[in-house]
Amino acid sequence: MSGRRAPVHINLQLDEPLNVRKPAEATHWTERFIGHVAPGRILTDSELTHLVERLSSPNKVLVIGGFHKPDTLLNESLGRLAMMPNVTVLCESIANIHNRLFIDSIDSTLSILDDEGKRSLTPDVVITFGGALVSRFVKQYLRNYRVGEHWHVGMTDNTIDCFQSLTLRIDMEAGSFFAQIADAMRESVDSDYSARWHEVAREARQLHDKYVSSIPWSDMSAMSVIMSMLPHDCNLQLSNGTSIRYAQLFSSRDIRRSDCNRGVSGIDGCTSTAIGASTVYDGVTVLITSDMSAQYDIGALTVDCIPPRFKMIVMCNGGGGIFRFISSTSNQPELEEYFVVKRHFPLQQMAEAYGFRYFEADSEESLRHNFQNFMEVSDRPSIMAVHTPAEESAEVLRGYFKRHAR
Ligand SMILES: Cc1ncc(C[n+]2csc(CCOP(=O)(O)OP(=O)(O)O)c2C)c(N)n1
Ligand SMILES: [Mg+2]
Image (cartoon, rainbow, N blue to C red; front, top):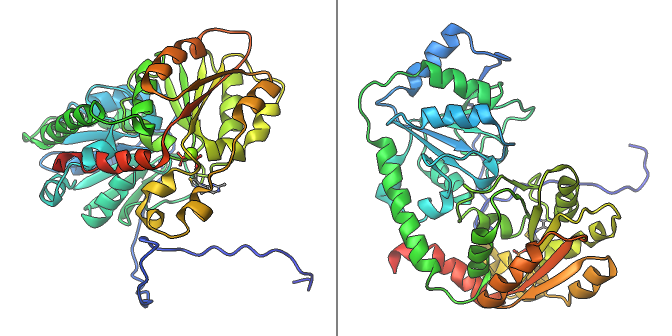
C-alpha cells in the first residue's frame, strides 16, 4: 500500500431474489471435488469408454449449448447425438447450432412445465458447452432439481459452476468431444426421454403461436415481426437488455449466425461490437438493441468505417424496459426514476448527423412496411426506431410466461 488515495473495487455476491430482506445466514461451506479431463485434441480409449458408459440409456442426458461460434463438426455431431432416444439437446440462439432435433427455445419450453414435469425431465447427466448461459429458467431449474452429474466441455480458463453441481471439466473443443462421443455411442435400452422433451417443446410452441397472435402492439409483437422478416443470410447481433431474451423466444433456425456481446452482460459496447462484426462478416449485420443500450454506446455511431450493410434496430420502449419486467425491480417505488430512466433520445437527429438512413415504426403495419425499405441494399448504413408502449410491453412479456395457465 502506498498510502495514496485510490479507487477500490469491491465485489459482493448478492443472492436472488434481491428485493426480499432476509436475516443473514451463516454460510456453511461444503467441500466438493470437480474432476478434470484435459485430453487436448482427443479422448483416450479409456476416457471415452468411461464417459460413454455414463451417457448410455437408461441414463437421461441433457446437452445445453451456450454461446459458441458456428461450428460444422459440432453441429453435425450433436445432430447424431440428438437421435439417441435418451439424449436431448437444448440450445440458446447464440450457440449457433441448428437442427430440427434441437430445442432452441429454452425459456419458452421450460416456462410451461409444472413441478412434476420438471422433476420427471431432470437429467442424470447434463453436459454444457459454450459460454455462460443466458436462460435464467434453465439455471433455476437445474439448481432446484439437482442433477446427478454436470460436465462442462470447452477450452476455457475458468470453471463456471452454473448449476452448482459441476462434477467434471473436460478441456477439449466441443466439436471434437461430441464427434468422438457420437461415434462411440451405441443404441441400448429404449428411452422416452427425448420424446418427452419434444412433446413439451411442441406444446410450448403451439402456446407461443397462440399467445403471440393475440397480443397488442408491444416489444414482443415487434420482435415477432422482426424475427420473421430477417433474411436467412443475415448476421444477427443482440444487445444485453431484453433484446437477447426476446430473440431466444423465437426460433433462430433460419438465421446464419446470432451473437451477443455477453461478457458480464454489460449494455455498454453492444453497438461497437456489432459495427466491428459488420466490417468483417459477409452479408448484412442487423443489430437489435434498445434505447438505453443505444445511448450508452452512442459514440460508436461516430466511427467513420461503418459499412452500408450495417443495420441497427432500436426498440424505443421508454428506457430500461427489462426493469419493468423483472420482479426484483418492477415493484420498487424507484422503478421509473432510478432503474428505467426514461430520457429524451434524439435518435433521428443522431442518425442524420452521422450519415445513417433513418426509419421509424410504431405499429405492426408500419413495421412490416418500413422494414423492407430499411433492409434494402443502400450506400449508407441504416437505423430504424421501433416505438413501443412501455408498461404494456412488460405486461405482455409477463403474460407470456403464464400463457399455459390462461
Ligand atoms: C454497463 C452496464 N450498466 C448497467 C447495466 C444494467 N442493465 C442491464 S439491462 C439495463 C437496461 C437496458 O435498457 P435498454 O437497452 O433500453 O433495453 P430494454 O431493457 O429496454 O430491452 C441495464 C441498465 C448493464 N448490464 N451494463
Ligand atoms: Mg429500452
